[in-house]
Image (cartoon, rainbow, N blue to C red; front, side, top):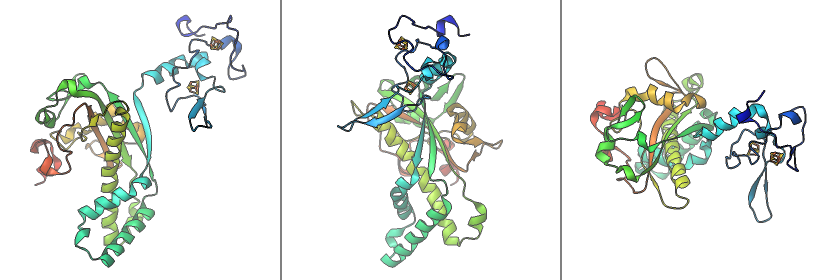
Length: 315
Ligand code: SF4
Ligand code: SF4
């Protein structure tokens, strides 16, 4: 039996019950509390909407066959959806292949190759991509967090602080931060058995492709957030703050994985602090009113410190 606060049947309504009652929903359990469904603006809602496109090209969500918000038992579920700031995205990395190839060409010195050599190497890259990337759709979890989490010392989540020296050096004015996002994704591991039988060059380019896929996907997420926040006024998104870079210690991995709820996209962390799949990423972006510094592409622009950077420590 539904509680009073969560259930109300408006039997005086001239439309009652405004959806066909069936085995799924009995008339006595018809809840009018969410008469206008509060989940309508969510692209992914738990109901069964139908989308159609009008003559002038507008995409309309049609909820006429959905009884989800009217089922008494779904009260908690509707609230959970309303409170959740998690966004689940599915990115097809095949659509990013050109950027991945460009990154590989840049980092593997293609500019010093003649045209024929370049062609041969590109062929190997394309074949390696088709052969090893069996799962081309990558799930990404995006979690919008309150901007008050960001302090000059680091990111503060309740009792826990994740230090990040770059924040102090970037000197972001608190009023300039509009929002913050945590994200996580993992690119499916390569089948080692198939890899064993490959040539050395093929193995090399498989690793390059995996690295390029993580970099390009991270950049895609950054642009996605920027587009989302720039509908009315231009906003900027910083580079990603993550464990091992920009003054954030690698030991932050388990904390970030847990807070982001990265397990929802298949990312886990073992006792040694390693993420699985091996090419997993977890980090934080800030949405700001002003652009903060050069986009950091390599160590030359790094605003972190050696203590928190895996690359620097390795030198
Ligand atoms: S949900 Fe709204 S329209 Fe439907 S029966 Fe109840 S009050 Fe009427
Ligand atoms: S009525 Fe159903 S389909 Fe429409 S937004 Fe609500 S839950 Fe989704």
